[in-house]
Image 1 (cartoon, rainbow over the protein chains, first blue to last red):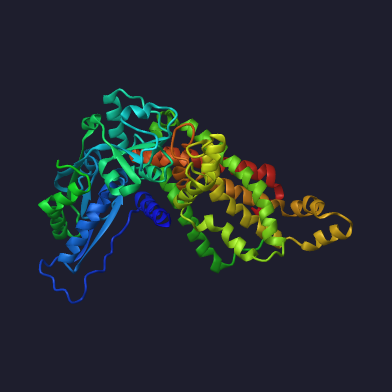
Image 2: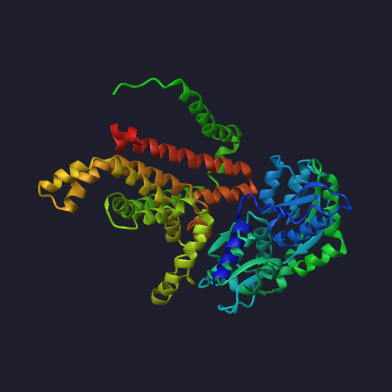
Length: 262
Length: 265
């Protein structure tokens, strides 16, 4: 129980901390000699749903380049886009949808065009054991259930609106969450019977949460673009990170986390 | 008392403090899209969110006064052991990140929570995602501000008045009502104002424990946060509305309630 509480608190902290988390892994010992020779600090702004995969890839890059420190700012894509247009210094931006990427590219902040590197579909998250017996999207129209969706203002909420429209379901949620991890937290705590989140979030949540797939999810496949920023303080490392994400290794890590190939 | 001239060494830091606190406000004013003001203000949900904010912050303040003033008395006057520990405990919400506070409320009052589970089984009532949950979250975060203010006022109040009342035959409850409470009224008022302001701006515990739904749980800070995701201009306007309403309310209250003793606030 205590471990589960700790896990929930960590999820909440990661999911809602306004400034995201920074990953200062001091694993590089003084004895390790750099072969690739990347140095300095690489700053990656990435959608909250990429937290686990990118943290792993960042650590790998650090191990290959002992002189390099990779820092992440994980948050909602729209919050990140706002931070970037307000002048936050970063090397790489990975967005959970093309619209927020457009905010950054339209502001002239990108170096070259964005690359779609992965995609995500929506899935219904239910507490372990599915106590309310959720079977599909139609259950979101049931008044008597406690239901969470993402707010229409954030990417997962916009995608949710699309699938509800495609399925002809009028959702009756009890809460419109500010981001996808916040919606998931409420499932983990057992406070809602179901939440509409991304498949990857269900995978990341582990045993406390089960996923229920539904056919209408195919109507809102969400592409994830990433880009190197024009003002990147560490362009070399930025390029290496983008290459790693696009490599077979990076793609496998994404697939393991529940993402699908673009 | 004659009004003292400000000593020079205080002047510069005080001016810096004013600049630091007021400049962001000026920033908001400068960036306000005045031409779209009408459209953005009459957007559906703005009035609703504002009304919900004002009502829930006011109810949270009333609850805080009813429960917090007695607690402040206990902290300031009682000689029970463990008072120091008690004081530290009740000020925990001041240092706890509100989001974590919201999760903690779930663990107690959620439908899987220690108390909430029992409540749901016995009565069928669940608290999360209701306006009640908004008030609870706001009270949890804001009440310590009132308690600290009132406790300070109680400590500063001259206990000899209470002793005198007691020697004149007043029982302890009468002494509290007729002597202590009037004595610390400015402190209670100041604490209530602080508490109300904190409740009005509450975000983290509310969005976690009460969720976000227009009309039932979406208060102004939540509306501002979500507007920021979509349309920063709208967020600025909403913030401005919240700001104006709260400043107006506070000025009004200051005149009406605090009167001359308002200096204490």
